[in-house]
Amino acid sequence: MRQFVMSGLNINSGGHLTVGGVSVPELAREYGTPLYILDEQVIRDNCREVIGGLREHYNAPFTVAFASKALCFKELYRILREEGMGADVVSGGELYTAVKGGFDPKGLYFHGNNKSASEIKYALESGVRRIVVDNAEELELLGEIAAQGGYTPDISFRIKPGIDAHTHEFIKTGKIDSKFGLALETGEAAEVIARAAKMKTVRVVGINCHIGSQIFGTEPFALAAKVMLTFMRDLRENLGVPLNELNLGGGFGIKYLPNHEPVTLADMSRMCAESVTAIANELNLPLPELVLEPGRSITAPAGLTVYTIGSVKHIPGVNTYVAVDGGMTDNPRHALYGASYEPIMPERPNAPATQNVIIAGRLCESGDIITRNAPLPDVKTGDLLGIQATGAYNFSMASNYNRVPRPPIVIVYKGKSRIAVRRQTYEDLLVCDQ
Ligand code: LLP
Image 1: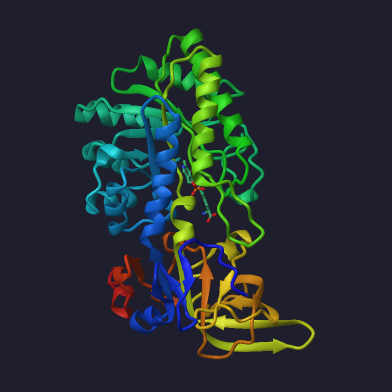
Image 2: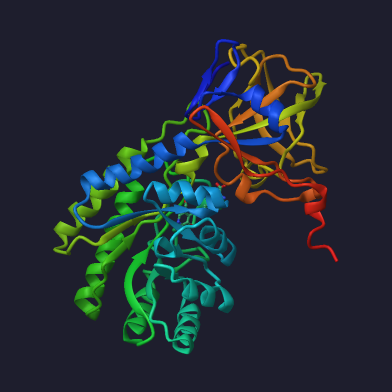
């Protein structure tokens, strides 16, 4: 097999898989399974690629804000901060984690399509850089809360640019039939922004869109830039509302399977810089401050989940189910989106595949599948099994279904490992029970 789809994997002299130079079987022995392993160097390199692309090709201020929904725990914010990243948060919980992780709130963009009054208040008190307003009711609520507290927040608006980014239906958030943001076509966006521009309690500085996730091509982003900048021009010329911030969201695709060929992060970020520059020039607009919000592409390729195989069920002429000691509780993406993953055997990564199996979890639910058509060598109870590129939307979407405790996150960096999030205990499961 040896299909490395994530970065930072290698094979050591003993023939075992390594992540960031550390033996995966040894990590499994030390920390147990299931186990999320994260390669800090890969996260840092990905941050540097996106930032580097903008630094080289964009001649105005910019921010790369990591989308916390992809992965969120305290230690991650220390790494992001060191790399000069901002972050997007979509809830009081993500904001709390970022702040407790020592992240400067001035680097935070607060999103969400239904922020509560207490979340808005918390965001204002924390001093986040930007509140990204989703709808007219939220604008009103924000205005009231800001007036009560004596704040004048800088805000931007989530816009639906009406772009279909050809991705999985459930992950598509930019088209008009969506719960997120204000529609352009109907005039809703212009109307709400014009209203906000007259308010004394907020300062309107920009617009945001997010056209989808796991997007492979660059065209959808160029198209989004065109739609958004044209809207900025119209707001300036027709309504006298000059905006200075364009946030194009996230969505850069990553390699989950050997046949996936994503554009590199450096190229994605260069292309965004070049498109925005060219279109702004064409429209005679000053270059706006550019914000990108990659989530998946920063952390997914840094993550390997390691399981232990419990049982192997051959159903002659039908299928083979390989059951592992985790499942949809630590990785719900197949159950939710039909997502596929590339497995790897940490104790013999070079063994050729001899069969295609279904990798199933341990939860009481038929849909508890990690991936189908998974190429594996002959496997048996007790073997370790790795699932690649799980560093985004796995831990952050994990649950305690069946009261299964969540696995720990172990970070490897410079040949050493450390626990960033410890394994949940049974006692943790009862913490809120009265
Ligand atoms: N910014 C905004 C406003 C977003 O809504 C999202 C993702 C991002 C940035 C980051 O997108 P990324 O670079 O990670 O693609 N749970 C799904 C993905 C949902 C993405 C929702 N919004 C999954 O597991 O595939």
